[in-house]
Every structure is written in C-alpha cells, then in structure tokens.
Image (cartoon, rainbow, N blue to C red; front, side, top):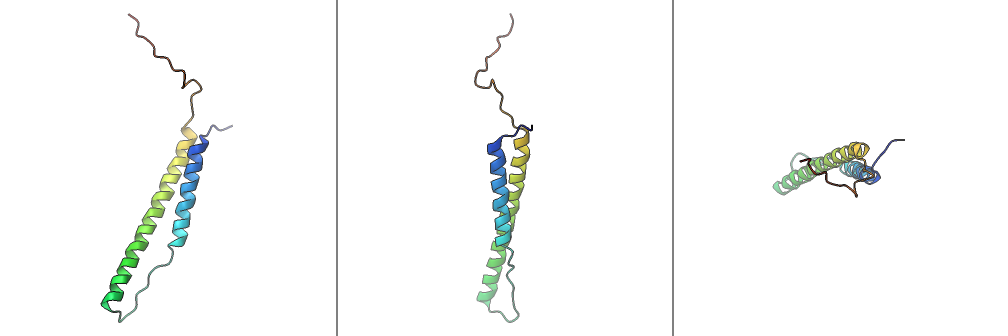
Length: 91
C-alpha cells in the first residue's frame, strides 16, 4: 500500500488535465498571407503572441501538476503531528 496525500494528488491531476485542455484548445496557429494590410499584420502578430502565451501557460500547468503528483507520494501526515511536545534540554 502506497501512502499518498490524496488532496495534493488530485490537485496535480486537475492541473495536468487543465494544461492538456489549454494545449488542445490552442493548437490553431495563426496563418498570414501575402499582401496583408498593416492592420491585418498587427492582428496576426497579436494572435501569434496570444498563442505563444497559451502554450507557455499550458506548459507551466502541466509542469506544476506533475511536480504536485510527485510531491504527493512523499507527503505523509504524521499521526502524532497534532500532539507534538517540545523536549526540554537536559540541565
């Protein structure tokens, strides 16, 4: 039996799923054409910048979610964490 902190694990899974959804949603690359006007070029540059930001966001979400999943396998609660007592130094 593997001891896993289920809240951290579920949070990591949710972040990975959200990152995958953002990746799938931002797969359309804006395409330019020859003979575009200045306004169309500016709109294209803005669309490319937004697409790059979505790709970065999805990468961050997937990375942090993966780290949370890894942390969940090492995070165990101590049974006596609520009743800790301080040890007095010997005199």
